[in-house]
Image (cartoon, rainbow, N blue to C red; front, top):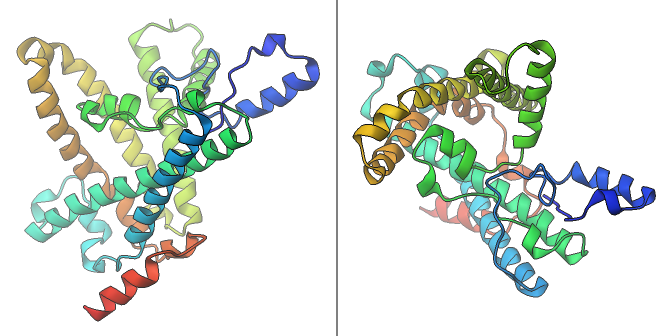
Amino acid sequence: MLALRVDSSKLPPSQASTHAAGILWNMRRIGTRWQVKTATSTSHQSRADFVFRRVATTLGTYLVVEFLVSMPPPDPSLVQISKATLFLLHELHAGDVIFRVSMTIGFWISVGVLVLCMNNLGAIFAVLLNISSPEDSLPVFGSFLDAFTVRRFWGVTWHQMFRSLLTGHADLIVDNCLPFLSRHSLISRYTRLAIAFFISGAIHYRADQLMGVPNSENGAIIFFMLHALVIMAEDTIAPVVSAVLSLSIRRVLGLFWVLIFFVWSTPTWSYANATSGNDAASLLPVRLIGPWVARYLNAS
């Protein structure tokens, strides 16, 4: 969230330790040699222009989050764990499928705007306090039009806040437990991929536990491991698809493919959260439009 572009070798010892601690909050390692590859520089902005734009965006995203959490909870019959099935899809009714699509889209919009809001808050304070510059506060998301494979969704479009954390631990485990594997070998690369997604799943699994999701219904690890497996499958067929279809066709078909896959896999993780009984609105520090939304819904 915070970034400071300096050469640590040129810092005195007293500042070097502070800079090292700051890297812990520089989630995408911006301004260092470990900067995530998808973080690209933005055009030059003055601090005032940057702060104004980010404040406006943050307020807008906050209102979106508040609007979404102010909606009435879904019908319990639609979010039963049995409705999150991966394989018994023939047992779902048309209403279940429609809800599954809308719930998936709404879930990822909610998560995305929440991440954007938190990232913007950190960037605003960092620029105001002169800790980092506007040029180092890079966009947190890539274009969703580039997410025409599951790999590209996670590696190009979605936020890269945990990428260094996940890949770093995956490298540590593989390099120490399987030192005989070449880093460039297929088995080494996919082992690192699987471990990174497993760690991500474990983090979200624990977060869901703290939110009151029962272990028997917690599908976070299953969700993330499914995505690791599908990325491997995509890599396998990618050469054939590239040889048969043009890039423009691959983009269009790929966007539909990613949407279908997320609609299929997301309920294994999201439905349990929807039935946990938590009031998401209570987590917001300030209610701006929630009371108005509730009054309108009650009136209608």
